[in-house]
Length: 82
Image 1: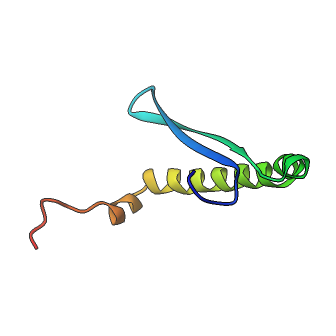
Image 2: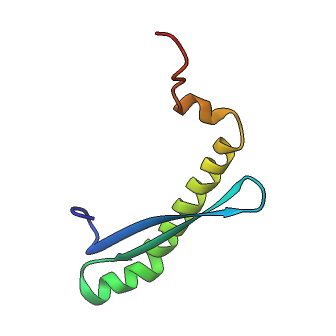
C-alpha cells in the first residue's frame, strides 16, 4: 500500500495445484490501522471481520465465475477476426 486509510496493508494470493486440474487460491492479508490503541481495537472488532467477509464473498463469486462459462466475458478471443 502506498496511499490509503491503513498504516500498512499487504494482500497476497497464493496459488497451489491440487488433485486433478484444480487450484487452491489462498488470500493472505496483513494490515494495521492508524491511531494507536483505538486503531488496534478497530482492527479486531470492525476492520478484520469486514475484510474477512469481503474477501470470502469475492472468492466465492470468482469461484462461481471460474467454474462456469462466465469467465469468457473477461477473456478476449485472440483467434477472433476484427
